[in-house]
Amino acid sequence: MILQSSFFSALLLLAHTLMDRPVDAALLQQQSRSRVEGTHLVILVHGWLGNDKELDYLKETMEKQSSADRNLIVHSAKCNVGKTSDGIAKGSERLAIEVKDQIQQIDGEVMISFVGNSLGGLYARHVISELDFSKVIPFIFCTIATPHLGVMNNTYIPIPRWFESLIGNTMQKTGQDLFGMNSIIQEMATTEHYLIPLRTFRKRVALANCFGTDFQVPTTTAAFLSHDSKYIHRRLPDKKKYFMSLETDPDQEHDKNDISQSLDSLGWTKILLDVRQEIPLLALPTPFFESTVKPDKEMWTSGDLIPILTNTGKNWKVPLGHTVSCANAKSPLYRKINASGQHIMDQLATDLLSWMTDISSDPIKNCAVEDNDR
Image (cartoon, rainbow, N blue to C red; front, top):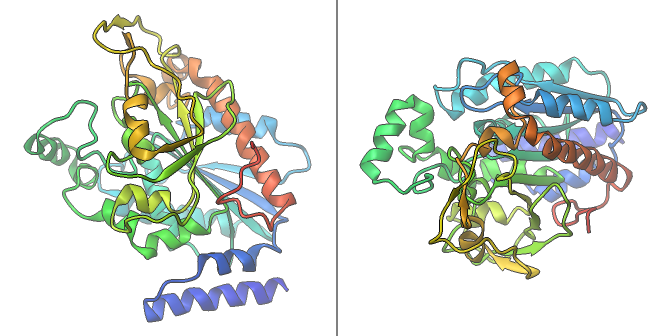
């Protein structure tokens, strides 16, 4: 049965490659549903100017929380340490080699999940297009403060296009990718070559910092929200560690050429974070801004969420949430400075392990649209 499933999936992928025709991701997922026992490999991917220690707190927490009978390997990618300036594609090439090497070292069935922080989320989205899904079972794809829309027109403070280009060139090829000086961000979000592998994962999760707390990756791009999008987001039951959780159902009517809507159409759980209390600096009063009001509706459009989630409220905090929310531990000093965000990673670790168990125990469940938190 396993050999037949692997052979069938391989034929589908080969046909896609030779004929340049889209693969039915649901069919690929169906072929792998009987294979849910084995080793679960979780790949942690650091961001721009980061290192393999960046997500160490999450790694340690997952390993501590994991039950003794779970065969779990949490691997922090090392291939892009000191090499995050040569673009998404180059970083993905190196990451693909490292991921494939990790898979080859495991005997038996391999279930794979990704957690990408910041730029690492884009590396991960790119690299899954290079994996052979007849040999691994895709489970959870998670990003933390990842610029899914790039940062063109999504900077913390609006800046003219010429200044965006200047910054992009200063950041070399990666900056050019992020500031829309080429088409890679658009292609990764709207072409089947990248969408099919992402759709094949049984759950997609995106964490985003809200209320003006993230200078590097503002809310709109981390949660791929668009003023022009009417894509419906449904609210999930709240958790104390998160401000709010939402989900998008797959296959709503959408513009396939719009990055935000195209990504939403895959079906995501979006976890919105409020780290103002965790930022270890005094707040400055902003009397001309309205107080932040927690949304009380059950359904929201993408465009309706933006003014709520980007409102700083009556007190503005220095936007250091990018490293706080992931409890960034790339150095001993960073670990100490960002310790206030550890409770968020505690909750994320709990959720990741819970989702893994839920999916494994009920593999027929379509986790693109179902959530065990409901």
